Image (cartoon, rainbow, N blue to C red; front, side):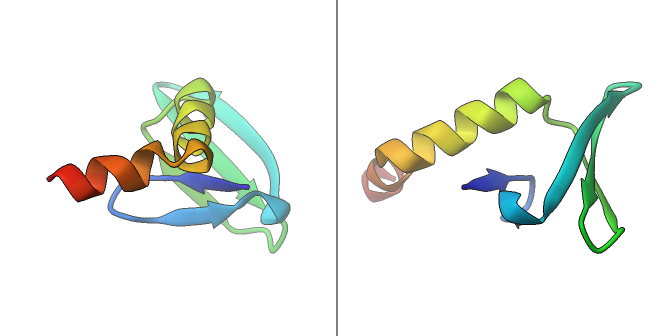
Length: 64
């Protein structure tokens, strides 16, 4: 599964250790000890991933 962040950035969840929501941002702590930051909440990240898995993202792109 993937986490879809801003600016077409994608994170493979196998590399994620933990998501931490602080001060309006979500920090994604990676297995290699790097940190990515996003404005999306963990719930929003989950919903974006579910849309991708269901194919909704691909259908939307075709209609643009």
